[in-house]
Image (cartoon, rainbow, N blue to C red; front, side):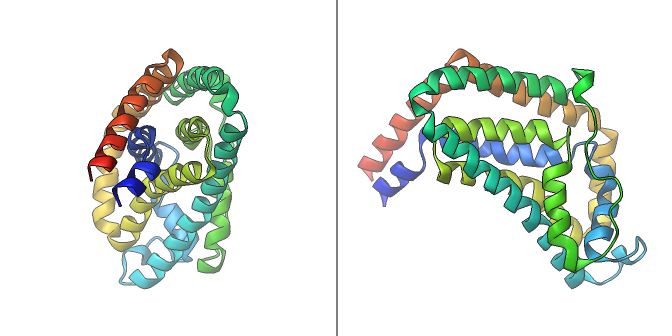
Length: 247
């Protein structure tokens, strides 16, 4: 049991997984997602805005879960691709890590509003409220189309997936990112009125959320760029190996 844990949960993953789930949560509370929450729920359930606050929790949960499954599939597939790319380029891992670190710093600056030419909104603006049957497809469209708000945070997670050099770990990081983004949608479906109160608070403090997300991405990028990430995760990997042998 201890050896399995040591083999599966490497030092780098101990750091990367919390960053991935936090990146997903920050994506949800970004300006492109949280203000439009009632619209999303209306699209994926086929309910009007007035009906969202009714007792149709089963329909709300089904539509939202399928929507989350749709964009999760996109992100997990992307994680597998980036993880495989890291595996194929493992001989050049140090150089790739530095380049990806610089890219992650740029993504953090983009998230903070820098590089105006990269702030172009590529999302799908008009989507019919066709209900539960199309909820997975709407999730896929969401996964492919919503930038720049999700792009920088997802890009940070894909950077970590590449440095892991494993399709399994890339998929795991993408899954955790999807959970960080998707669980708030599920909570909103189950407790819509209460969630609106939390959304209102976030909208009043949205600049703080953006700054936290941007600073997090820049910090991760600098850790990768300077080699501190490799040193830190090597120490954690040794600790995990020692823990596994002790158990």
